[in-house]
Image 1 (cartoon, rainbow, N blue to C red):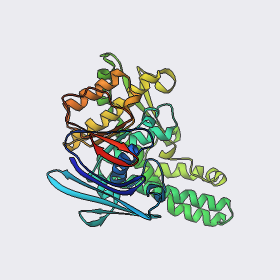
Image 2: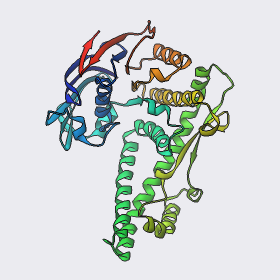
Image 3: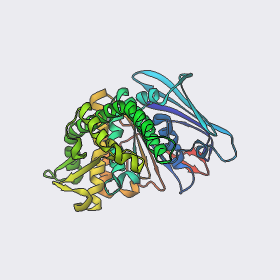
Image 4: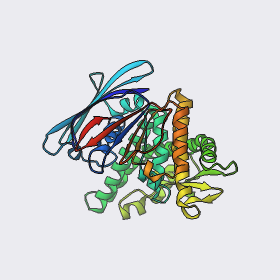
Length: 368
């Protein structure tokens, strides 16, 4: 897969940007607040159908405009594609080769791995951050997994609304039970499938993680593993048993107004030499683990599909020490990963790579 041309109009402070990509690594350099992150955010938005910074469409549109768009030309499996998103104040529309489509269809053809300073903090942040790391790989694996996660979020949102409406007195006890009886079979099925997906993916990624971590740390004996932590009551993993657990928790759910049981409450624990890295690893070790995990995602995708996803690094270089920057450089040299990165100042010696640099100032992008 190869991105060829990006065109942006009125996306945040990017009023009129056209960039042709020629090479493997693309560096967007400039001071803070000039629009570097907006460029990679536009790529993220095209790939995933959402922003990593906001849920509001109007925040993505340039202040003095009513609409905007982002268009990308890319090659995938020897075929040329054009994907475009049209943004208005409260709506978004996607097209693929001129035909209306959905983000799921685009994501299947335009897989992207995103790495930010927040990614490096995932180990010491809350469980949601670590679940998202794992889910990012799962939804990349196939369209069916992505649809399962999408459907689960819809069902969970509706179930929580029903519980909240009961607390507010909008629903009676009988109405609550009737609605939950109709929701819970689907909820149990989807929740169980996501739990199994996560457990399977951990087993697939762990061998890559161990190998990469040993290379990053230059320590052939270092060990890492990942534990998936679900509630003990969810140990019997059949849809029927899961639904019984939901029924037992129903009264408590109704008291607090949200769903307590399910994969939205699970955790992912990274172990470094057998110890919980949240409490027993240095910041450098934690960052090495996340770097190993991210590159394990890339290598797994390459093995399964025969090509690399796009790699986006937003202001990450400044957060990595020399050891980890060297690993990144060596990885890019021996792979074909098309990489897009932002930085306030680029002083690395990346000779041997096809690097294309751009300066970014006040929303204007200029090739260096």
